[in-house]
Length: 396
Ligand code: HEM
Image (cartoon, rainbow, N blue to C red; front, side, top):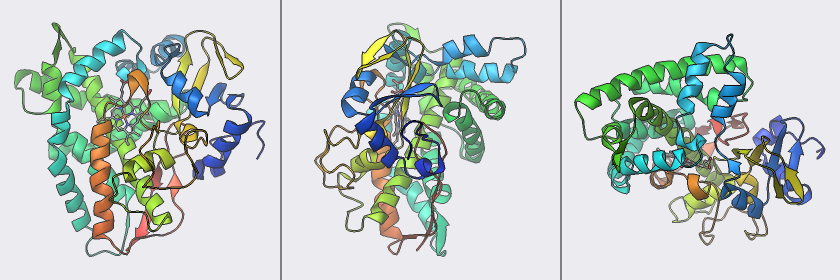
């Protein structure tokens, strides 16, 4: 491996990023990548500190839109799609972030999460029932993905008949959010998916504005904080964010957890620490992006205002300064400080839902498919930000 220009998108690193990340963490923990014109930060202490530091800004869509998408030849659909992303709290700094997070917090309550507990188990059972007469399946496409998509769609109040359309829209938006910022084709396709999804949710939100129901979209319409409320566009954008953030990542933690358990026989799928250890050992958030708001010294390097930074939970979570024997998957590990849900102001709002879904789904698979074995080599999404399989072929 050449450390001079390590490439996290090389086929070897997409299949297994951990050796490259370990090498960076040891030898160049705050690394400038000429290839990506970005910094990569890999030590636990640095990633943790940067995630809590407001000078590492989350506000990265608005500057991009101003700089790159304001010209007359920009596709209006691409500009509109980035306009929706600009309303996502995950891409905002205070005070806008504080306002959106408070209002969403009024609707996305622990009670709303707890209410779907029985539904998660029922949907998991239905999907596993459908595999009863089979001997092989793709656990991503036929289990994790439909499970997490159904749960979040049901919470939002999306009618059952429309749920399949969400998969297509969400797949296309993935290219927009996780893809390279400069990839025009992916932008155009993602923008098409975003336009269809926002038109769909726009109608649903308008319906709930007239006739509130007992679901999350209606709760978002009703949410108030000191007289403040979300606008129609903000409710729609937040619906897209929840749908997207809520199932892509959770699909990946279920897939990665099952895979880790299969590769480490003897570890219990239903141990209290299984989901937490999956998030540490092979979590869905490989890196988290930030934009420098000002010059900052980190690890003896100067990160300049305007530069992009990839903070790497995947490297921090295997830092031997914090986790003993970090490359070992051990569900009995003392619950710790893994950074798989981020930390600080943007700490994952959906963490309780993700934990609930994964802690039901992973043991259900092992209970219902006891002779489970992987077949072939899994394919991984070739992206910098997330870590998940495109398909997970198994036999049982
Ligand atoms: C295992 C599954 C999940 C993982 C690994 C994950 C990971 C993350 C991470 C790392 C962040 C921080 C991003 C940053 O600092 O820029 C985040 C934020 C967020 N997540 Fe999750 N997430 C998961 C599931 C969910 C679910 C199920 C939902 C909701 C349905 C959700 C909703 C959100 C939202 C709304 C934010 C933005 C919070 C903010 O900006 O204040 N996530 N997630």
